[in-house]
Image (tube, rainbow, N blue to C red; front, side, top):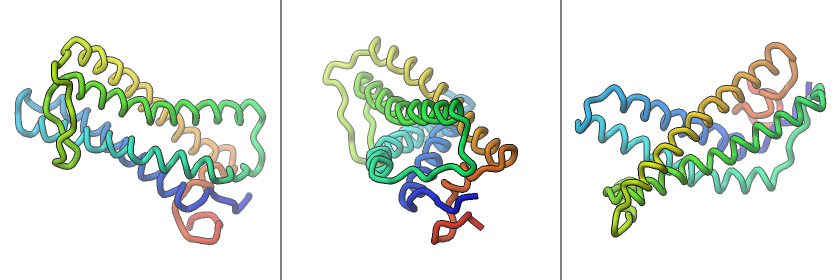
Length: 184
């Protein structure tokens, strides 16, 4: 197996984005269990928005680092169809990591409701458009569900590569010790 890994900052940003996506998902799923109009429901929705904006803000540096970094080769090499499918899934994940939070931001802007980033007020339309906000909410939710399922497929594929195919796909992105060797 190769000992080549992704650059440390790229690995850190990968896991930070993954954590923010997971927290945003858990929070929005929790929201449905809470009574409408309750302070708890509003707090959970606020947290979902904060993690969503964090994903959006982290994707800029993540994309920049990814474009500047070499992709370490997978050892042993993948069949051509798997390499192609992996690139397609990664492209879809990157697109959705941008699109889902942007749709959420557009939805909040169109709704006219007050919202903020860590207490800093964010803009809303002077004349709210509830119809547009509702359409954007539906698209945001659908895209978010596709993102969630695709991220689960991505994680399952990494585990398949590690436990069944016995290659270093997962080891290349795991956090861990310095020096490029596999994480302990």
